[in-house]
Image 1 (cartoon, rainbow, N blue to C red):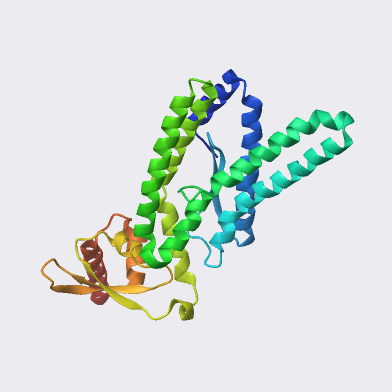
Image 2 (tube, rainbow, N blue to C red):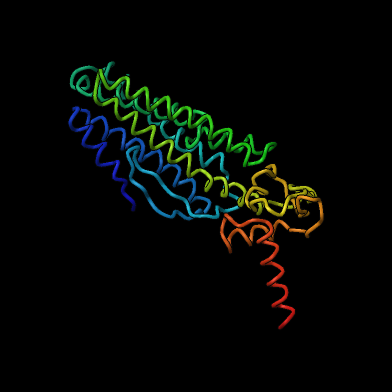
Length: 293
């Protein structure tokens, strides 16, 4: 379990401003949100790498690669759906407290706040911004035609703008209540998660390799330059397609053919920063060693 140092700062801020009970309640709702994600992941035997405690609550970290049959739509919708169900449950408790009165009136405020908090969490997580669940769903949709690289760059741009807006909004509102500084912490958290979003993009690209070949269609051939980063080739391939690459230099001279399976093997074996020319060179060296034996 990893604990972020920002968590201690957030708890201290909530305690000093008198909102510690609200923060603990929100922490519980977020934990149930992440638990719903984890339950869907475990139903399809997706391994969980660990748990991280941050200023925005509990966060589950899945281990790559994800199972090929894991429905990503269900995985990302599980959290907001859980908050929606909790909001309905709290709304039912609120209506019962109004109807019966008496001692139930003591819990009316608790039910109302629980319903409001879960509604806000569900709506916030469905915003089409990365790293929220809505942004991950939008990434899946855009990648079908544009490829993961272009889709992620578009989402990353708007996510950075949203993080800046949230940060300066917290600074502006802190003059009315110091608890609004939590918006600044949340903005920094969203920005850091967006920068680490390339890992999720690898999840999606790797997951589609295990699909039925009949659904993938025929393998296409694309051209690439030998000095390009190898990862960029996969980023620009639309989701659901398989491609091989003819490698040329900047003068247009053919340098070789790179299969998609060889590309993935090189990325996993030699790192995500390897270039196409380095990948071809290492492949040729391995062939020479095999032939020499």
